[in-house]
View (cartoon, rainbow, N blue to C red):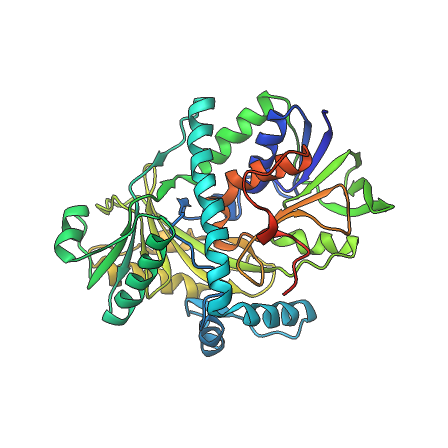
Length: 415
């Protein structure tokens, strides 16, 4: 049965949800507070990475976060502040940083990331999309023996759950990247990973959705919800009131603000990431992550993108120059022949990624509201998990059996 659906949030999760919902015959509207041309969905590294099976809540992460708390250029910067939501999230995050949780999270992350990559393949083929999309794998570049040993262990964990991964020595690395000079001791290589140029996919998907009748309401902020008997009747924006049968909350880092109106306290924090683009000829052909620096490089369509760091400092788009400098320094440390220009560093952009306390997204319906499907909290895996999340949202709204188990992602789960 066709339903009227309103999706709150027009990022990659919102667009993919709209795509699958309209395929089921539903009438879809997307409401977004921005002009839908910036943010995390546009400035990310463009990875489709089933290899990223370890959640952000790895053992020792909080200890490192505390160590780096007063270093604004560190790979993980958690800005200390007296905010009740932040303190609750920090407590829950710390509780999740253990091996038992990692073991539980790995299959949940792998299942949704693998499904998502398969769905990206289907979308491109079925809709004749032309967005840049390559399957060249992903390198984890290591400059120290200690990090290389750690990454080899992670690669073995990936192999244990069926993901292709292997260690590559310097000779093998040279064969993979013959023209890019690298200052590393070795690497691991995930052959199954893919990469894209994000804005191309976003623009092509928006064009398609408009053609099939999805309505867009840009620059509209949802200010209130009319809730009766556990159901949303109307959403109230700064411009109008919108009635629908079902609602989808895919507002990224802002989702927790709206969820409070339902009496649902989603524990989310905004994790700011940065990107620097260069049109220099870098000779880089395979995406890579700088293991020690926690930064990444992606050869995109016509340019190369360097991205990274995790800054948990509230919802804001302030550019921290120390973090930009740290990314630029890491680029030259790993690729000695590449030096980003002053202009390239000044043209930096950032995006906010919604981070749950256990590194798993929130996907599903809360008991607090019967006609709201939540889809947020994907942290650094939003791009990798988007297509599958959209498919799952459509299955929930359409009362169909879900493609994978939703239990690990339930929005009412305890921390």
